Amino acid sequence: MTDPDSSGNHPRHVAIVTGASRGVGLALARQLLARGARVLTLQRHPQAAAALGDGPLEQWACDLADPPAVAQRLQAWIAALPRESVSALSLINNAALMAPPGDLATGSDAHLSAAMRVGLEAPLLLSAAFLRASADFMVPRRLLHISSGLGRRAMAGASSYCASKAGLDHLSRVIALEEADKPHGARSVSMAPGIIDTDMQVQLRSADPARFSAQGMFAGFHANGQLDSPEGCAAKLLAYLERPDFGSQAVADLRDPG
Image 1 (tube, helix red, strand yellow):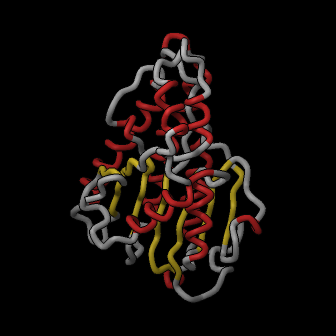
Image 2: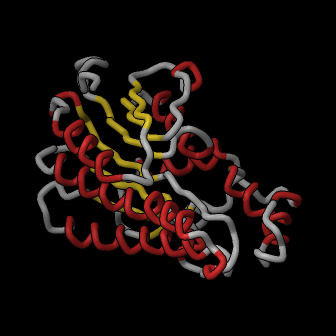
């Protein structure tokens, strides 16, 4: 394990980002480093450091479909951070996995289980590890869960994704309630980021229309130029993360951030 203070002695924002091998997670890691943060990324396939830019970076190759060991490692890593080296601490639960689109009854148990473990069980366990290990940090602590409009509006053919994102919203509400009256309590937001040009969008618009009735809608989003870029989305997410009123709404939408 890398020495948590090996990047220097001056206080930094320490940010943990899951699912940073591509898309929004990769863009978040790049932009955090550019802002001077110390970044820990958790993903199956770490990027070459040069692809992320300069700055204090640590990457873990891990499978969030098997989250208990990752959560234990994260708890130990945070607990070992020298308190004087941290100006703020954030966990961004960005990783997600979509089972192949189609009715629940036709889905593979293995695909459905993996999607729920990555999309909900991992954020739950990582959030618990973050809160336990950082309880004595006297700095801003923030949890940002990347949710979806599909956590608030059901769509046929996307059962595991809808369920995991709805669970993230409620997880954020619970954390907000539990931390509200604690000295230096953490703040939590579950954010729907809009529709982003990611591999998941490719999966949806390439699905078999006979199995996924909304395929045409997602193809239309792409054809009509309605998709935000991962870089643009990441910039808006980080601007929200830095707002002084972060956490005033436990569930929010980046298209109408309030």
